[in-house]
Length: 286
Image 1 (tube, one colour):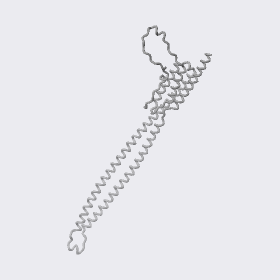
Image 2 (spheres, rainbow, N blue to C red):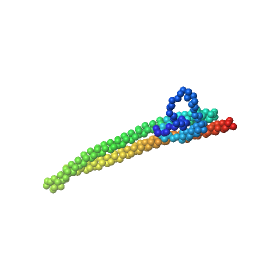
Image 3 (tube, one colour):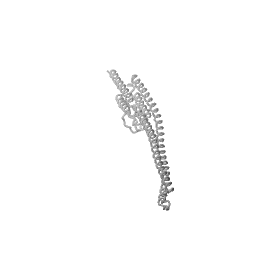
């Protein structure tokens, strides 16, 4: 909750008198004490200034319900003290205007509180959904990394096994080709069956290695495509929820225009009532 100056009505109506030191008095001295009468015009001026202040008071951060309650309490206290100190100004018309205006602003602010509570509940639900999608996105990224590592590890294991077999067969083929053949084999030019079989096995392993590499690349591409699609879906959901949360937070306000209108209405009514009182007093004097 933001720090908002607490403005209470009574503060504006306190008479500017200094506190006197306590002195010892005889019992008979008390009967001669008099209380200073409040000047109606001075009280009215203070009240109007206080109403202006309350009408322009801003509430910076939600929730605003606490601010509304405090503001209404301060405004109500100000008007009650005004009626108590200068009852001659508060005629029937002014009193009815004050009661009507206060009931109206109380109703409006109560509706604002209901709306704020509804928005708060909706925001909590949206935040829970957002946390769910954030967790799902984190899990998706973890699963993708783990799957990629496992596929790569399996590929490296199998491909290394084939490469080792290729190296072994290649060495064997070289040994066979270097082996000295007997005279009859050279004379009749008969092929070495073992060299031919080794060459076939070597070609087969090379084909198998290319297939393993191709399958590995296909698995990586498929996994990446699925991961990218799911990640984009989750990110879109997350951005949508965040925007809804921002919109819900921006929907509430401090009802400044409403409070200003009510304060201006009461201010005008007080000025008119004060003017009527002065005219009546002048007429009675004359």
